[in-house]
Image (cartoon, rainbow, N blue to C red; front, top):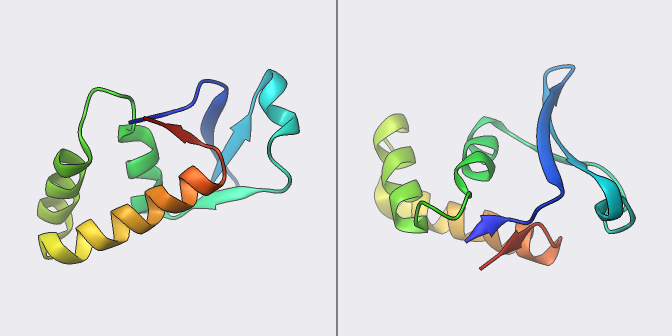
Length: 88
């Protein structure tokens, strides 16, 4: 799974904001922002790392149970999917 081409994340005034580029600008109606962990997930979704690996890393880095992180990451990815940010 990875972020679709044409989307980048930038830190704007302390907020992690997804910016659509080129043709993608017509696909997003509004502003998409992420907290620190959401931004980490966004940046790790590059097609080379599995969701399980993402969950394991965040679980270890933040000392939160695997199950809690797994549920949150899956919910976040579902929201990204609904907003057209990710592809399998």
